[in-house]
View (cartoon, protein in one colour):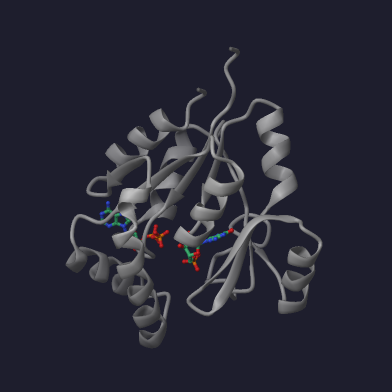
Amino acid sequence: MSERPRLTVLSGPSGVGKSTVVAHMRKEHPEVWLSVSATTRKPRPGEQHGVHYFFVTDDEMDKLIANGELLEWAEFAGNRYGTPRAAVLEHLEAGVPVLLEIDLQGARQVRESMPEAQLVFLAPPSWEELVRRLTGRGTEPPEVIERRLEAARIELAAEPEFDATLVNTSVEDVARELLALTDVV
Ligand code: ADP
Ligand code: 5GP
């Protein structure tokens, strides 16, 4: 059988370091394509439309969902997020490895619709460290941090559903391990 590019899904609790690890990996290996999600969340300082997310209104998100344009979507801590389907399929068909950075609900949907996808869980070294990172990032008010930590307990309990777990102690080490997993199969 010929080699085909891999679809890799990276999930893990908010604040564990998913964006940091992915950015580190892609700085050295831009050949791994990262899907840009649509979200109804407001941009954080420095986040750019079309780069970090497609920032959309509630109406626009309704339309994306109704038109079947999302491979998966979920509500997370009060906002909706979804993966545009066409770009993912185009990259896979062109032989490019694809990475999705999405929440647990989205990972479960991808597992259903694309069972060949590889699901990778990014875990914190400890609960205390997760709280420290999420709080230390300083991007969310306390009540939003609370909602994200509530979601984190559920996400951590789902770790056995994943094909591989990486513990984010060192960004460099995890980025290397993730790169090895995103290669062709
Ligand atoms: P996520 O994308 O999972 O929500 P971020 O990438 O925004 O998480 O990381 C959350 C915070 O943790 C950031 O302030 C980031 O700099 C920090 N961080 C990420 N990885 C590590 C690590 N291995 N050690 C220490 N701090 C980290
Ligand atoms: P944040 O608001 O911190 O950028 O993201 C919050 C959560 O939403 C994270 O767990 C992130 O992985 C997830 N997320 C980002 N994009 C998508 C997406 O397209 N679909 C799903 N299901 N989750 C996403």
